[in-house]
Amino acid sequence: MKILLTAEGTYPFTAGGVSTWCEQLLTGLPDHEFTVLAVIANPHVDYLYPVPANTRIVPVPLWGIENIEEYIPLPGFARRKLWPTGRGPVQARLLPALDELLDTMLLRVGTPERIAACLLEFADYAARWDLRRALRTPAAWGLITDRLRAHPLFRMSSLEGVISCGQSIYRYLLPVAVPLPDDLDVAHASAAAFCALPAVCARLQRGLPFLLTEHGVYLRERVLTLVREGTPTLQKVLLGNFYRAIVEVSYHLADRILPVCGFNAVWEARVDPSTPQRTRVIHNGVPTDRFAPREDAPDPGPVAVFVGRVDPIKDLETLLSAFAVVRRAIPDARLEIWGPESDPDYSALLREQAATMGIDTAVSFHGKTSRPIDALHRGRVFVQSSVSEGMPFALLEAMSCGRPVVATAVGGVPEVLEPGPFLVQPQDPRSLAAALTTVLGMSTAERAEVGAANRRRIVHHFEEGQMLADYAQEYEQAQTYAGLVAA
Image 1 (cartoon, rainbow, N blue to C red):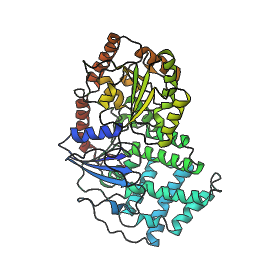
Image 2 (cartoon, rainbow, N blue to C red):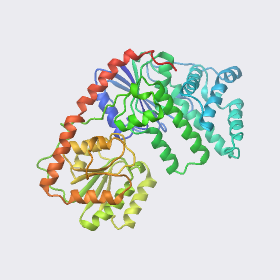
Image 3 (cartoon, rainbow, N blue to C red):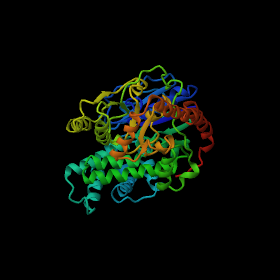
Image 4 (cartoon, rainbow, N blue to C red):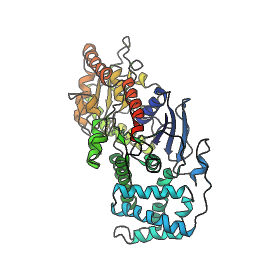
């Protein structure tokens, strides 16, 4: 089968759980051909993963290019000669769709059906005319400025804010302008996000079966980011409503919703009550033969290890606060943090916090690693302090390696780590410290017993082979969904 797999800010350019999942599908299902449409911030990024023989990558940079056509030279994609924008097509086709989209962004109105119809109008327009030019015409800009000035919250918006709004609309709509191959069998989005837009449009235009997997809760995490980063009010409202609209359309049109954990399924049903009848949870899985215990490994001493992105959503501030408490009970305890540091400001904040607390000599930042299994075996315990998760691979890998783990009860984590003393509430440094202190103070035999129970759970319920078999089954069955869902 020929599968369109869409991703956003992940594979094959950055490390993380979604990238690991993508690589598992591509390498674990070699009989299928994959086209990976990778939405990225800009074109100046390097590949982090080798591309399998059954895969081709189509980067879609949202910034740093003018027209999407200039970045898609691959054979098999539709070749389009875009006609210059004329007044008639803009007035008749684009402005009504833009007006409805602005309603959604400003007022949070519009049903998923109407929003989908607008997105399809943009996609159909982009197939024949120059979308970038159209959104820069006086008519389009006049519509945007008039709508902002008519809104009580935004009527005093600066020119810079208005320009930023217009640019954001064009950039975030770029995925609908991607000319897709004609011979696809299935579209599979890895998030209910802007990367899902090509799958949405292919569903509407061609009746292409649309599968949707959610790893984290995209809407929740994006809103948290807008709040945390102090985004200006105009962009916060516009983007927050835009995110919600894209999520609602994705849920509405997906033939099958395949969240990686039951927590996500509950969230999806709250947003769209019709999702349960189309939902099947497929847990992430790990290769238990590769992530295995090391029976002859020496005791590393009282060391806790974190493996993952150094990102605010991992709430490493709480981890550092907890570790400061651990150090008072176990003076020679150490904390190793392994993972890419994509946010320099956040990394600097963590180092400053460690120094202020007087634990900087006991905390080490090692950066990204191509050998997470080695990092996991460097400690007596794996720790995860996130405020939001889906089904984190690092947790599964640590348990598969027979390591004791301490983690916060967020997302799908309680579906992996059963309730007990090592599953703690998020943003609670004292509980996290108590759990870490307990594990670090255990005897070798006690830690081995906990680790063995963790591995048995992964082998029985979260094995990579079962995960791949479940997705292969969904791909095969997807052909029966074509044409069944209408916008």
